Image 1 (cartoon, rainbow, N blue to C red):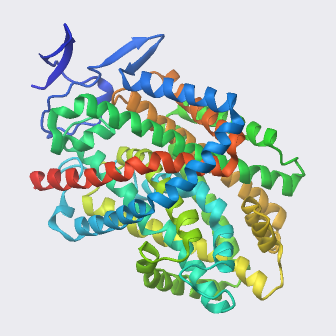
Image 2: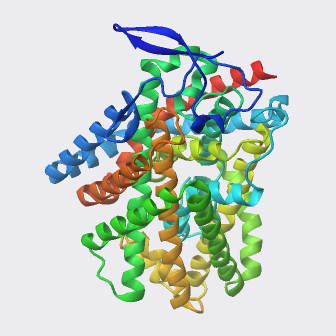
Image 3: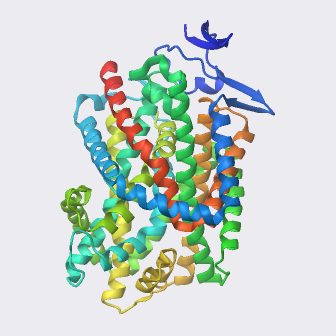
Length: 541
C-alpha cells in the first residue's frame, strides 16, 4: 500500500492512498516497489486545469513577469543581457567545462560496469518503441535545429579562427581543427548530459514507480523529502531551463527560416517576419501537441529524420563523395585527439572560442537536458542502462560528426578548391543563418534543396516545441501524463512567446544569455543526479 501526504491545519499528515490515477498507471511496472508518493497529491483544479501547486503558479507567474518586463524595457533588457552574458562566460567557464567532462566519465563508468545490465522497467520489460522510432524521436528532439543552423557556419568560423593556437595560414591544420571543434560541440559532451537526465528519470519512473519529474531523480538520496520544498525548487528550475533552452533554439530556427525564405522567395528578412514565423510554427506545434505523442510527435520525428537523412545523402552524393567519407573517418580521429585540449580550461589563450562557443554550448545543452532527458526517458522503457547510455553517446555523436563533416567540409572544399566565397562572406558578415543556403547554391538543384532545408528547419522547430511543451506540462501537472489538453496548449504558446520576447529584446545575445542563466544551476543539479543514479542502481542490483 502506498502512502501520500495531504495538507491539514498547516501540517502535512500521512494518508493512505487508494492507488495511482490512470494517467500514471501506464508508467508503473508491475514489479515496481511501492513508494510514499501519491500522484496529484498537491494538485489543484481551476478553470479546467489540473496543475501542481506551487510549481505551476510560480513558474507561470515568473515567466509572465519576465515577458512583460523585458517587453516594457527593451533597451535596458538588451544591455543587461549583454553584461550578464559576458560575466557568466568569463566567471563560470570552469564550472561548465569541468562538469561536462565529469558527465562523460560517469556515463562511461555505467556502460562498463555490471550496473549497465539493469533493465528500465524490470527484467521482463520490453521497449515500447522500435529502435528506429526511438532514435528518430531522441534525435529530432535533441539537436535538430542546431545542426541545421551550425552545420555549415561553425566549421567555416573555426577554419578562419581555429582554437588551440592553430595557425590559420596552415590550411590543412586549420581545416582539421575546424571539423574537430565542430564535432566537439555536438558529440559526447551534450549527449552525456542528456543521457544522465534520461537515465535518472527512466529509472525513477519505471523501476521505482515515481512520476516523470526532475525531483524523482533524487529519490534514492533524499527519499520522501523530494516531495517538499526542495522538489518544488527542482521542478520550477526545470520549467525555466526547458522554456528558455527551447526559446534559444526556436529563436535560431526563426532566424534561419527567415533567411531561407528571403534567399529562396525574396520574403523580407525583418524582425516582423521572424515574429510571424514563430507564431505560425507555434500554432502548428499546438496542433501536434493536441494530437499526442504517437500521432503527433512520433510521426513528425520520423518524417524529419528521414528528410534530414535524404538531404545528407544528397550532399554526400553530389559533393566530393570519397573525400567527404574519408574526411568523416579522419574527422573522428581529429576529434578524439583534440577532445582533451578542447575540454581543458587552464592556460587557454583562445578565450573567444572557449567563452563564445564552448561555454555557451555547454550551457545550452544543460538547459536542454531536463527537457530532452525527460522526453527520452518517456520513450525508453524496456531499454537496459547500457543500451540507453551507450546508444545515446555513440550513435548521435557519429551522426553529428557525419553531418558536420559533410556540410562543413563541402563548404570548405567549395571555398578552397572552387573559389566560392559566399559562405565565408556570410559568416564574416555575422549572418550564420545564411551559411547553409549559400553552400547549397553551389550544388545542383539548389532551389529544391533550399526549400527542403526550410521545411526541415520548420519541422525541427515543431518537434522541439511540441515535445518540450509535453514535458513542461508533465512537470507542472505533478507528473501526470493525462493532464487536460489546454495545459499543453498553454505551455506551447508560452514557449513561442518567450522566444519572441528574447528575439526582439536582444537577438542572438539574449538567446544565448537565457541558456547560460538557466544552464548554470543545472550543472550543479546534474552533478547531484549522478550520485543519485549511482546509489539507486547499486541498490537495485
